Amino acid sequence: MVRRHALIVSALGTLAGLGISAPAAAQGESLSVSASARLRFETIDGQFRPAPAPQSDTMLSLRSELALTYDAGAVRFAAEMWDARAWGQNPLSSASTAEVNAFELIQANVQVPLAHGGLLRLGRFTLDLGNRRMVSRQRFRNTTNAFTGAHLALGGTGAGAGRLDLMLALPHQRLPDDREGILADRVKWDRESFDVVFFGAHGSLPEVLGGTLQPFAFGLIERDSPRLATANRRIGTFGVRHFRAPAEGRWDHDLEAALQLGKARRSTLASDTADLEVRAWFIHAEAGRTLPTAWRPRIVAAFDAASGDGGKPGRFTRFDPLYSARRFEFGPNGLYGPFRRSNIIAPSARLEVTPSPRTDAFIAWRTAWAENVRDTFGATGVRDPQGVTGPLAGHQIEGRVRHWIVPKLLQVDAGAALLLKRGVLRDAPNAPATGNARYGYVDLILSL
Image 1: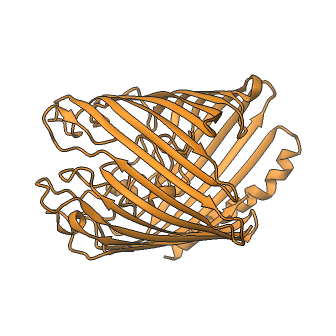
Image 2: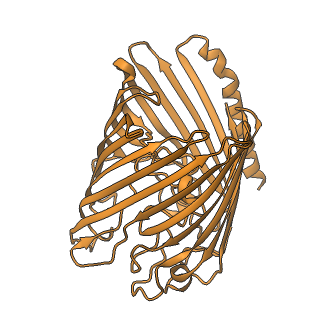
Image 3: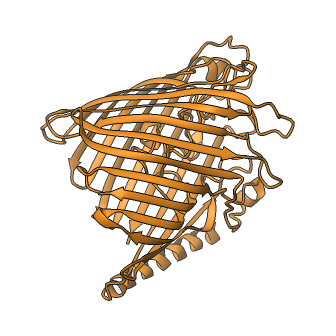
């Protein structure tokens, strides 16, 4: 334990030193430096995942970030390093490459500014598109999605500007991905290859039907190789989003739907060679209102649904969430995270408050069913192939409070979730007999 504390203090001290030197570097108007560190403690009891995941688990994790940008005039050079490590988790923990990716260069690219605020990036990069339901740079998760390739952004970056994003990239395979390497926080360079290719377009058109319209289309092509087992997905995801941003004293909304077509296999097993027709879908509908009173309460009602797979011959109907984020809608992940945009039907209600410029909080309720009773529910790994337990999975109550201890420098983020298991999560053949799931976390975030 002393060694762990020494590592944490050393990392925070190093980043603090970098932060102090950043303003001096910026005086030359060519080099900018930023850094951050997030220390998290999280714990779960009443595990919802099947064995061998432990009934209870606790983990301490640290994510350190260092980003540099050099502006040479006609071009810019950017690099960003993430160091994501974890300690103290059970040897059979669910912690994976979503929590551990030690000393990784997630961004290293050349940027060419274009007319009207456009930009061309070549190299390693991270990317947020739309509301991050298809392509995202992670915030809550300890590691992030990253790509190697080309990203072209045309148009402006302001709220009222039209924009078109085009990308052709190789998604990173986070390494190491074996249990021993993850438990040891082993440093191993992430891999990209033409075994997995991701490409697409995302548009943003303001002032359409009283809001912003965002059509999108993405393609994913992968193949098995000696270094990577895949489901040989060759799928296209086509969709549209329309939203009106929250503002005091008015209604806001966020509507999104997507259809997936193509071919895939039902598993990544080498023995699985049957190409199936993909027909999958996803929808999100949300309406909210911000009241012009103290604490600026926002009341939100939402509905999420995504198709599951019933195992019919020749067809595969489970929606693939691609490279999305889910914490902002489905609750914390890490050691928790039972829900995702796969095989789920889930209405929810949420109350958000902002007591001061330094503090915000919310409390939310969600009930979830399996869209297909014979498929794996959400991200739990729990499945009733006979469908006799019924579709209801359970109810989730969650809350979070964030507070800037020192504005723009040091923030604390604390949250908890209670999963009341029902139906499939309690009675499916592989559901663990562990009672309701209880989860909590505390983050301490230093930004420099």
